[in-house]
Length: 429
Image 1 (spheres, one colour):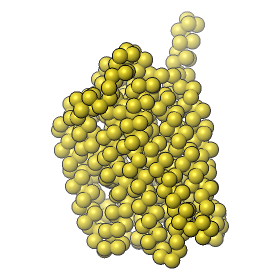
Image 2 (cartoon, helix red, strand yellow):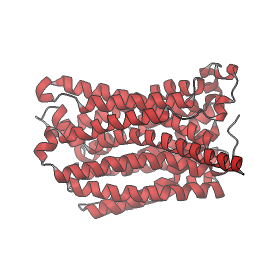
Image 3 (cartoon, one colour):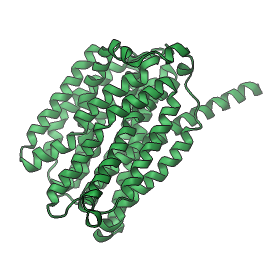
Image 4 (cartoon, rainbow, N blue to C red):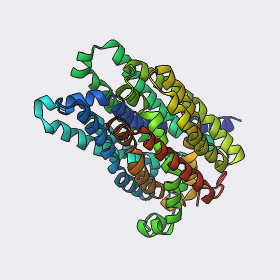
């Protein structure tokens, strides 16, 4: 009896360690990216020339997009480490690098003191974070999917976006609190640096937590020859699966960044909604998102992945225009619009980590997901905030961007037809 109890306790402890170690590192990575979007107006005013505020905001958003350029390289580098050295090692290195990028932004000198060198330091920091994030998602997704019981893998997969959203939510809450408690002068002088310095500290803690994790049985069960097999021939051999990852991601990444990440910042700069009220609207919507994720994850374990993916893509496409039309000049409109969209976005977001892992064999699972996913997010997700701002504010044709987003969602819905139903698949081979 005592042996059975000890095994149960050991199993629960191992599960808790997996969830906390994976979740906290993922949360820190997403927090880093969210606070950049949230504090864009302050970064623009401090690290770029104040002569043209509109141009400074666009430049800041352009660097947000440039950070995505490094993601495919991170996907390959950390994917290679994950498939050759171990998932745990890849995850640990990724969160450490992300922490370094946050520290660089937090201590960056202002444009007024060093000129364009301030902008350059921001660019380098964002490239470092892009490299790290390009490796974080495929590594943590693969690790979590391989550690999960196959009959509950859809539910376990929701931890990726749940923990990530907690990171975003914490960053948004921190922005709202700082906006309420500090004067605009204090925010511009030093307040905007607090979130980035805090991100560096949290990243260091996540690094320590991940260093204590166990490696997955699926990876440890691979032979030495399998771990040393050339990567590129395997990528070419699984090019169909790589294309499926891109097709399934393209609509999700754009619609998620529009409604889940930059909506409060866009509402502030383009629609002139009060910054504090917009941030609180984002908090409400992200809480709704977190609540919806496990519901979709459990549903996918019962009815299958494909039906849930269709629901997410088609629902997001159908409601995007109505929610965009609802959003005019009020924070409550922003809260409703974000909440409705994030409920449908949650359907795909909840289970794509499991779906992607189930498409590839163990020997190429991390890099096979990481490279195409990072390329897709870089090309489409990273440019979404800039395109939205440019088409809406500069050219005055926001509907063009909205049509673009819906078309990409329809493409993702069509790609669901191309994948097999993978619910309950064994990932040990």
